[in-house]
Length: 474
Image 1 (cartoon, rainbow, N blue to C red):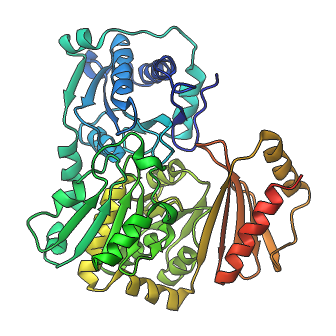
Image 2 (cartoon, rainbow, N blue to C red; image 1 turned 135 degrees about the vertical axis):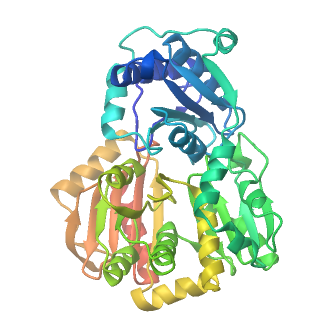
């Protein structure tokens, strides 16, 4: 069995590749990477890392296994006492000046998956260099292990609450009092993940009325993947309409992604949310800096950044590419189409809970409904209709698809002439009207993703149909 890190850590099916044995192999590689990079720690003291886990099946068990291997390698760990959002680990690493954090989660993947995310000292995703270093060490030496109870007695493992530092970080950036003063009615869908009732508790004792759906942990996530996309948020949409709520907020399994529902039940795609946040940061907070988007994100971002006079950089899918730029240059905000949005001043990492609260701050300060702000953006920068299809294909089909796209790419897509082709990540066909169709391999699941966007709604379904037909051709 091969252990391969994708766009964000290592993920695999539980009991197939994601086993206790393989978790220990990965942890041993992480330990060796840490010891080579940092030695034994400052003044001869052991290195200390933070370890967290989400609500998935056996996540707490795997987290303990990670701590056991670290302890055997003379690396101490602070283990979360409860399931937490991934960003709680990131925040703790930064607050306590730790060299690394490890999170047991498969994020938005279906319930049969679990995984490991590695967070660097700055709280963001592991760099390509770190991932390569870890992968090179896999199975290079025997796994070391001590018992959890023995390591705890010796002080190598300490269990504590990671949430206080996380909440402190949110309170330091978001104007929660401005939100509490508004008579908002908000419905939150935690999708049975690590977000729980965090938003509800942060906004307590104010005029806001917060209702949380699916706050209770469920390792099956109610029978669907905990991904906050439109097709998974029908219950949230109905609840928002039925209760006449102002907005609905959803977070994925480890709460680093966001989905949002307007008061009419409409799902806003993450690119639209990024535009609303960008506008708020620039116009209200007078913030400045570069904007980074992944290749699969909306053209509205391009037009808005041009209007604001900000530099825009496009990167491959995977927040690690955004985080890398956040460390190298003055980046204001960066985001993926999948719901991961990060603001450097807060943390060079995505955080769905934080972003939900910051969007509420934008509504409170601007005193406008979410849909009205979006309408203003669309009036100025055009309507952009976005869609995605995920195809489970055989390896031979996948290779055939990308071979055809490379050798003989289409000159038209649903009647729109292709103006140029981008191969930054997968193959992206860009039309003369700036509509586009993207084919790329998923970095977290054995599927091919087909993305499309068009300024004309009828063309969107035609693009996706065209893409599926091309991908499944014999």
